[in-house]
Image (cartoon, rainbow, N blue to C red; front, side, top):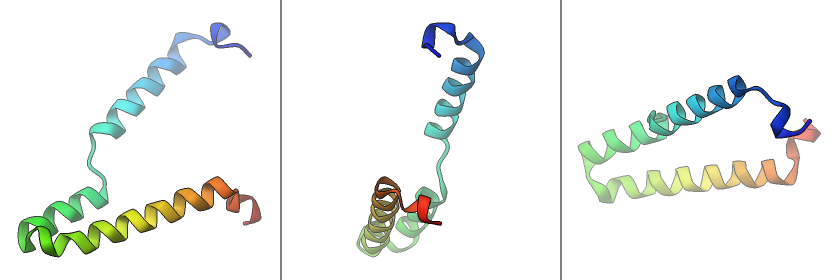
Length: 70
């Protein structure tokens, strides 16, 4: 199916979803905001590193196709 044959409705729905998810803070952002406000940047850096490591691992495993093994 070519993109020309699709109606406009799925594209509008996708655009709204992308917009909503891009402006909505997730749990990691909220946790880092609270941690930074309470304890400062120095105490927040390990949490940021943990989030970065965890997300990198998830993206790497997804890219490697680990979900097909489950």
